[in-house]
Image 1: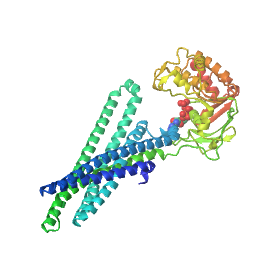
Image 2: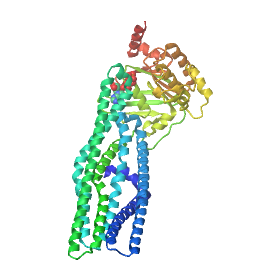
Image 3: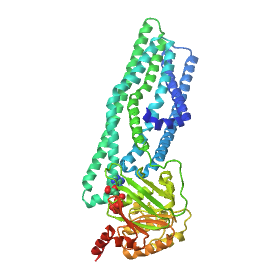
Image 4: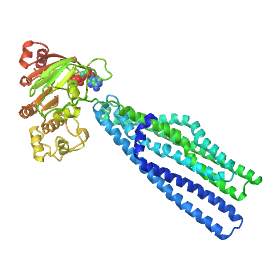
Length: 570
Ligand SMILES: Nc1ncnc2c1ncn2[C@@H]1O[C@H](COP(=O)(O)OP(=O)(O)OP(=O)(O)O)[C@@H](O)[C@H]1O
């Protein structure tokens, strides 16, 4: 039951609606039984030609029972569904609250389609926990107990038959079906996750699949997984109906048992025959409530599995700062890496090995090195997206262990190789830089990054699909420039931009960042003469560091890289 904690906590928060659901459910069940029982009694009594006022009274009772039953069933549906929606909303909010701090590293563990299936399908399936597992058995037991007390006035046999019937329809039959259902529900869940994963892959990889002419085969897999999901759903619901029907048939058999016992007791002179129809009708009505019990175990199992899948995500520990927390000032930070190592999850080789360097406050540092040498990992460590216990990183002489990642992000301007753009307009995408930005400021910035062909109202498609690679980079850098922060982390921000435009942007950038600490990852070695320091990464290690002139004089790795670059350019 531990794994159901996520839904039980939300149910506890809905106490009032839960109690009302039980109350209305109980009144509905008892009045339905009363309605049937009174009808049975009326039919028998009418045959004995009683005074008219007796019949009128009975009919009035039936009408009242009918009205109260309808009202309370309506009330039960309303409050139980209100409770369910509130519970689902609460679970979603809680899930997202837990997911948010995990977001930077979440895709190392989960595929996006699978996450989507958890957020939608698994949360959705938890609605059955409250509606079918949590409170209906309570209502059923209360209605049964009331009926048993009522029928005990006629003979002790009736409560005994009712109890045996409750055991059979509420426990034995549902338990017998549980195992078979469990397997089917597992298949439904798996096929739903597969469908969601295939859908995400086809959507995200549509262009590449088309280019590599693999779209058809992927689409075929997608159709197959959709067909599997539908087939599994069909099997699941037809089996659910079958189980309910068997349970209903068992309930009818019990009612036959009530009839048989009643006939015997009438024959023995222990029961007045006028009550026979009433008792049978009562039993029919009460056992009708027991039929849905057949689907309780699978719903319980389904909810347990769905909760565990959600817990798998929410139990992940976010990379967090430790106490005592320290905060960064708005000043440009000095950065120190002291024998820092980091190995990515699932990898054996460290991406960064015992890296040590110092970046003075307000200085400009370039990080160069072959692809895969650990440059981006250094940035992720610096941003607190990744954390390591091997070595220490400090910002403004404070160890990063005590600084919350949000604090670092708040003080930084980050332009990565790929930056995200939202569906909307250029204005929407620039406005996220800072509150209160005016159109003039944004237009001015677009001019500085040579994006004058765009107006602020021009549309931007999801992920900036309608922009070229260079335009996306320029938009990203202009967004960062509008933020005005004192730490700049740039991961090849101009790699898709032509040299002339790139040089212009860099000139403006240098003006704007005179006092800031700037770290620039670059594959291009020209223009690095202006940097205060260059770090050369090789296989996760800092192989060389110094000014441009120092490295060229040393004739080491940087010098060799420069020679190769020149040979290629000539
Ligand atoms: N999320 C990850 N999970 C596992 N390994 C990773 C992950 N990200 C990077 N790596 C590995 O860590 C090493 C360093 O990668 P990193 O991205 O830091 O290199 P880089 O120097 O920035 O490369 P590039 O210049 O191509 O961007 C590589 O071997 C890479 O395969």
